[in-house]
Amino acid sequence: GAGVSQSPRYKVAKRGQDVALRCDPISGHVSLFWYQQALGQGPEFLTYFQNEAQLDKSGLPSDRFFAERPEGSVSTLKIQRTQQEDSAVYLCASSLGRGDTEAFFGQGTRLTVV
Amino acid sequence: SQQGEEDPQALSIQEGENATMNCSYKTSINNLQWYRQNSGRGLVHLILIRSNEREKHSGRLRVTLDTSKKSSSLLITASRAADTASYFCATDKEGNQFYFGTGTSLTVIP
Image (cartoon, rainbow over all chains, first blue to last red; front, side, top):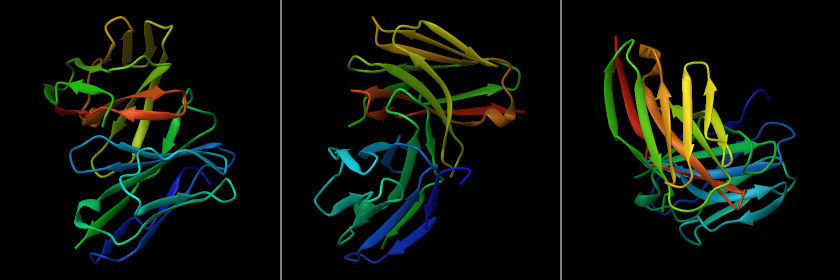
């Protein structure tokens, strides 16, 4: 596709519900990143993939958060037993190379936990 | 926790004026990037400056990097109303991921 695509754009979940957020990176991009952005804050790093390998998951806030990229393309961020503090915009980005190249961001998924 | 910190947190200027935003970071870096984010939208890459570079230009944008002070500045010349957005610096760690600052909210008044 022309850019990074994320779905859904908006998600409202009841507390305790599991959610899955999808990211379609730009075709051929090796690196894929997930970020969490709270209102009025900068994006906080969650996890990084290089192809299908999850090389860094140090930013995942708890074991309720899980990300995968099984075929090195589409990635899914799953949040189990959602809590109110999980409410945020979840941003996905991809880049052709590693950290020394431009990252292209999707529009994000706004998750609201009620 | 975030690596960088921008200042000022908010900046309001008249159209046509120049806008300067600063970014400070904590650890050594390979490169630093500046991004723009319009309200409710994703981030748009503006410019990348490598650790061995001191200054870079792109159109109306001028970025400087001082690795000894662990700081960078973004200058937008001849600002336009369309430049109204939040601006973030992002630094890489071990070449694998980007760490963003807290952002500067710029308002350009027509």
